Amino acid sequence: MIDKLKELIAEAEAFSAQSKDEIEAFRIKYLGSKGLTRKYFSEISKIAAENRKEFGQIVNKLKVTAEDKVNSLKEAIESQEEDKGIYGDLSRPGEPIALGARHPISIVKNQIIDIFSRIGFNVSEGPEIEDDWHNFTALNLPEYHPARDMQDTFFIQTDPDILLRTHTSSVQVRYMENNKPPIRTISPGRVYRNEAISARSHCFFHQVEGLYIDKDVSFADLKQTLQYFTTEMFGKSKIRLRPSYFPFTEPSAEVDVYWGLETETDYKITKGTGWLEIMGCGMVDPNVLENCGIDSKEYSGFAFGMGIDRIAMLLNQISDIRLLSENDVRFLEQFKSVL
Ligand code: PHE
Image (tube, rainbow, N blue to C red; front, side, top):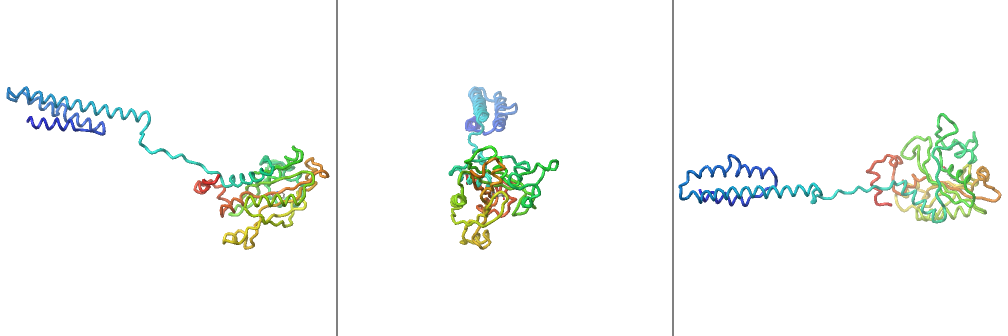
């Protein structure tokens, strides 16, 4: 029996536990009311008198060993829990910090702003809900002018004078009304047109329009500025100006960039011509200058306007304009690497 007891003591000494449950099971086995220590204590009376003392001491040692074990294991587990309470589990992997991405529209808009700011243009902004004067009349588009049909306008029903701006030229009117030449400003912003929504067009999109007004501004200045822009923006300096019509500019032109015909995509986006239309432009009509309080005999200027969405689609090979306003993170996350 003594050998058995020594074995149990060795076992108790070697015991280790990971949880409170394991410690409790150990305590019940050794120290419980039906446990081993009790059992051997109750054997003492049956032991021959000459061996009784030694036996008693060994049983006691079993008890003390088991008690010490239970105490030290409990202490160890409790101090572990305390650490967790303060710091959490220090061995857990860190939580990744989710990084957002700029919207492709913002990326292109910022690029355009950056390019024009390098040649002295500032940024001006205005309201998306406009009045007739700033969106149309001041821009040489009086009531009943047929060219108003070019821009399918959303009117605010209760007031035919109030509408959602159809272009950011309205901001240029506001800028001319409030600033004296020389003026060099670009106006980025969202615009609205009542068009059927499809992969190619939406009822709202984004523009950047530019305005330059000073003494002796000529068409050559316009062309140089556009050439600088296309070189910086697309790395392409070959452009052509096709005669066009806008009520607020005279003469007016559409600007095409020579994109080239090197890849299949080039064929697709230029419809096999190599040329890509990117914006409208022209010399500001003297009437517009006068409407905005600028002396058209002293000053002249040019203006241009382009759609940001189309350029963003072009540069990122986005085939459907609706993707730009769906807020689908699977789409937006693809722009993470761009600033
Ligand atoms: N406002 C025109 C448009 O929205 C673009 C434009 C701006 C054309 C300035 C010429 C000059 O289509």
